[in-house]
Amino acid sequence: MAKKIGCKCNFKNNLQKSKSINRLLEKHGNNLPPDVILDATSHKNLDKWETICDCNNRNKVISGARYHQTDWYLWSIKNLATNKKYRKKGLGGDVVSRIMVKAEKNKIPVIVADVDRSNVGSQRIFEKIGFKRVNKFCWKKGEEPANILHYVNYPPIGNKCI
Ligand SMILES: CC(C)(COP(=O)(O)OP(=O)(O)OC[C@H]1O[C@@H](n2cnc3c(N)ncnc32)[C@H](O)[C@@H]1OP(=O)(O)O)[C@@H](O)C(=O)NCCC(=O)NCCS
Image (cartoon, rainbow, N blue to C red; front, side, top):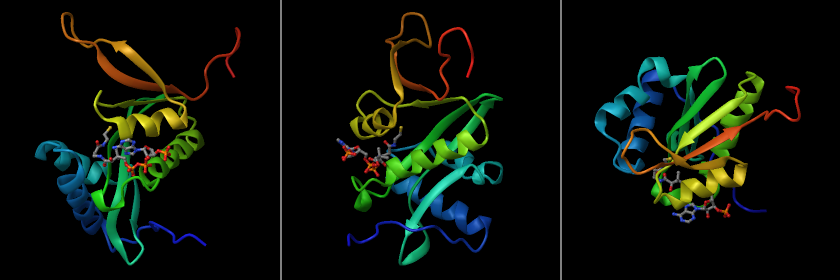
């Protein structure tokens, strides 16, 4: 049987959880600015995290991401990161899939994610799950179009909502 990579986390308290996610993002988050990391791991956002831990150290987060609710119907997936030592083992995909399950339970129909054009790994994760890429999404006039992936959980079929 293949060795299990990644286990359920077991944090003593929120402070430990916050510090562990902070470490993951600082070291493995692709140069996320400190203020972004601080906000992502602040008390108000901690319960929005989906995390996977080292099986021998259940308070060491090796992969994680969080969702941000921007409207009643919309979650945005943010701060996805996997420890460099554990990449390409399916952990990032697992984390995103878990957020999708949570979204479904909470009846959130639309989920979006911002992914950098050069981030092949992250694009692969979202595309494999079924996110649709919106290539010509523009924020500001005159700027290059952003490469944003959008996913609609329950797209309308025909003239009726399902
Ligand atoms: C992007 C990132 C989260 C991927 O995490 P991961 O745990 O390695 O992802 P997975 O193992 O679930 O990979 C899913 C798929 O993408 C592929 N993949 C992952 N990284 C890849 C890379 N750098 N190049 C090409 N393919 C890659 C995997 O092989 C896998 O494909 P498969 O299912 O066909 O085998 C990780 O590289 C990371 O933390 N990067 C730095 C932070 C970052 O960029 N976050 C994303 C912000 S949107």
